[in-house]
Length: 248
Ligand SMILES: Cc1cc2nc3c(=O)[nH]c(=O)nc-3n(C[C@H](O)[C@H](O)[C@H](O)COP(=O)(O)O)c2cc1C
Image 1 (cartoon, helix red, strand yellow):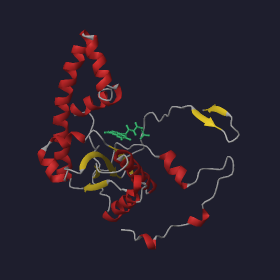
Image 2 (cartoon, protein in one colour; image 1 turned 30 degrees about the vertical axis):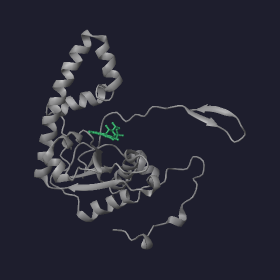
Image 3 (cartoon, rainbow, N blue to C red; image 1 turned 60 degrees about the horizontal axis):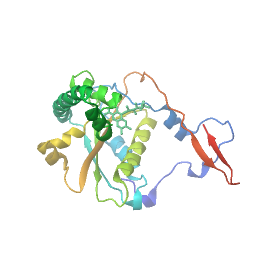
Image 4 (cartoon, rainbow, N blue to C red; image 1 turned 90 degrees about the vertical axis):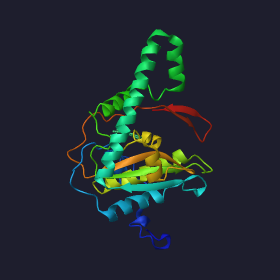
């Protein structure tokens, strides 16, 4: 672990504002070139010192009140990853069955459709719904055969919003791994694991911790393809001189 009094921050003194139109710096490069990787070299494990270094980047993330409300669990045991994956798939099959009944019902009763949109909007969003179906049908891998999985638990006692803090820590880890040329993919479809007593026990998912998400890590196979798009969202800008504008 990094001793905070002995941090060797390379080139920290060289940090500066870019000139207008100047090329991206290393941090920006990492942000803009990162993609979710869903194909990995199966037989190439990430060395322990690299995983530790990635976790260090998570540990140094900001958090509300410096509460650091996270717990990281590294799984490199391929049998365990497969077992977790199979258990998640079995639960997702049940969820899909339930969703199918609800969906059929909603087609006949408008009030059911309204209730679903009100209380289960995430579940019935076409993207996660489609992905869950693919995972349940075995057509999309859960952790995409990544050799390393970092499971993240969140401490519910945080004075702020532990979900947010965990997200920041996770993105620190994702960007650090990417800066080493490794591939990563956030995998939240694994949360049905918390429905199993055995996984609660094995992973320590008990108060004050809840299972939040996970990150798959490994050496990428090929280059991620598919759409890489981001919406342009309006930015409301209250200027220093009292003016207001909307920027895109
Ligand atoms: C919190 C979170 C959970 C995600 N869960 C999954 C997942 O379970 N499976 C998966 O393949 N991708 C998952 N993703 C990846 C997103 O699908 C991906 O980030 C998004 O489509 C944008 O693509 P990009 O990461 O290549 O820019 C998740 C991303 C985030 C931030």
